[in-house]
Length: 221
Image 1 (cartoon, one colour):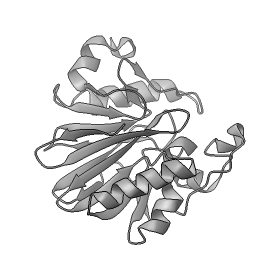
Image 2 (cartoon, helix red, strand yellow):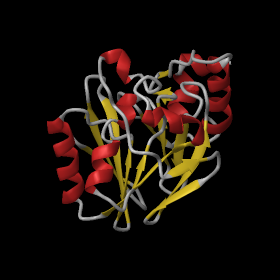
Image 3 (tube, helix red, strand yellow):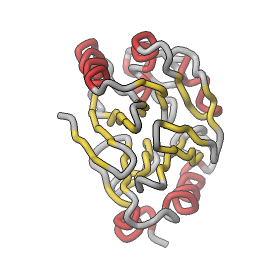
Image 4 (tube, one colour):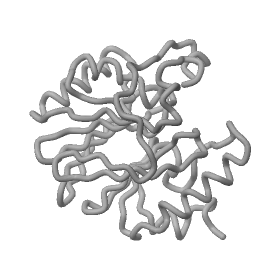
């Protein structure tokens, strides 16, 4: 079931896909579209996503991955094939994960999910413009080395991938001090955003920055 959220400068649609119910987000603004974490894995799911995008009558400009794990990149390739002018964007430290089933973890589930090569390698504080919406890249390593959040200041929302969830935080154990680095990044780059900022996480329901500051047990000093 697709949920829709309306903001001053954009519409955000939520489409959970796959056995892990990974949230795929579709951002539409000013006739342009960005797909964030295209998680559709099966052929019917991919057909559903493509049909939905076509129904929006916009230009699919970006396919953005908040990080390189397989459940967040599963439909990269078919979207790139279907919307040939679109550009795949991921943080520079996760670029290799898109091309390797071992690095992105799909091989551990008996799958061979790979993406086309990224067109854009993102850096901290970089921006992507989708119609009237500007997405600021917030690099928060921990869950992966290249995990990012994408913040839209004017609309008041942020896509947090598998870094920050409602009531919890992401797993971070793949490199030394990964968890402490992630918590530090969340506090310094996400909790400083306005309390009313809507959080769109990689899994489960949305929240707000204020709610997580007050109640998330991993973020209490």
